[in-house]
Amino acid sequence: MPLTHCITNYVTINDCANAVLAIGGSPMMADDPEEVEEFVEIADTLVINIGKMSQSQIEAMIIGSKHGMETNTPVVLDPVAVGVTELRNNLVLKLINESKIGVIRGNMSEIKAIARLVELDEILSLNKAKSKGVDVSEDDEITKANLNDNGTIVKALAKKLNIIIIASGAIDIISNGTTTYACENGDPIMPKITGSGCMLTSIIGAFCGVNDPFIGGLAGTTIMGIAGEIAGQEVKKRKFWNWNFQIKVS
Image 1 (cartoon, helix red, strand yellow):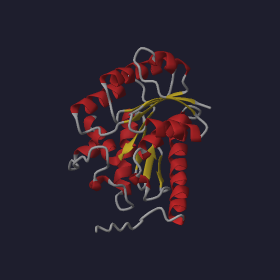
Image 2 (cartoon, one colour):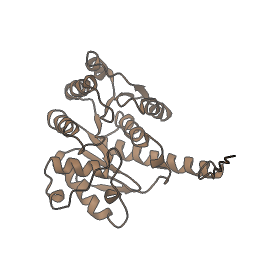
Image 3 (cartoon, helix red, strand yellow):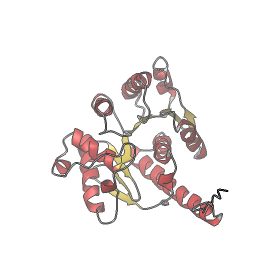
Image 4 (cartoon, one colour):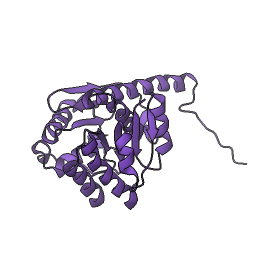
């Protein structure tokens, strides 16, 4: 049971804890700066999610990620809405530059935003897509038509940063800078669930606690997609999806 220490957002904290439990991990959701080093000492992995930040959380993220270098604890970063505000941009750059991030998992808009922040050659020639906040921009949705172009960006960013990069979407792209995989598991209803990306990052974190980060990233991404397929089939079988409600007003 890998102890997965998650500094995550309050919107999805319970879902993330349950997702880690569901795959056999042990979640710890502490985010106080005064105790974060002690938890990193015993944790198998540290997950940082910047979705709903407070100043206290930001401090804990910085302290925890830096201490992770001393304890050789894998760190998985979910850069929610990076590219939208300077606060998020500066925090992501600080975490990348001053600690040892093992995996970055985000949607393609967030991955492209990081690529621009680090001035990746492969991204500078592209028009800047308009960010949609925590959701992927329509222009950045990964499809079979743009898979090669997006795969090139993910691979180049992974190589430049020496970090496993995972761009999730209808098709997921996972790269270590040398080898790149595309994963097409999942179900179209998954983006309709608040926190599906946060849960994926936490699951990846749990897998990275007992595996090489590249293997952990591949395993977590694939398992989340397959789970989504099974859940989607069950939802459709029970006809919970696309209900037609009729409201009568007298």
